[in-house]
Image 1 (cartoon, one colour):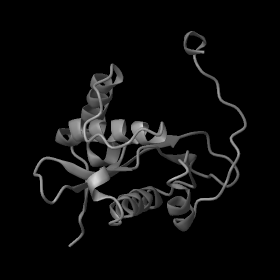
Image 2: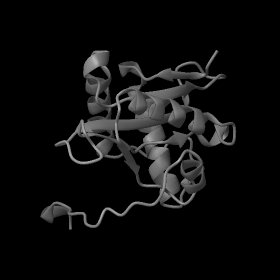
Image 3: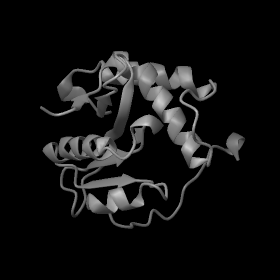
Length: 166
């Protein structure tokens, strides 16, 4: 029996907690089990609840999780992505692109293969829908995991932020 299961709307608070841990680790600050609440968190929880409530055929934000075996209601790891339909193009006949953006393991559960298992489930979900390209931005800690799953460097040349945020 697999430890990985699809995320559900009630997982939203835990997914936001893990997302906060991911941001803490990316900033070089790790260790806290519960990051300080920030203004983005209620909005993230609302988006997750809404998107995870979509019926399976309409789901565009797949989430795969591993439950914390010692703490009911708590997650040990997750992988989140989005499926986007763009205009079809050579090499992308259906125009389906995946993006992986929230792979995190609670510090107390690292080095057990949970992130890999969640990511493999997410990639299988994208494969089942024939996404022809899947992108992600990797932290230095995750690069080897992603390379082991078939990811390679790909240049996305430019990015733009909203002028108020510059």
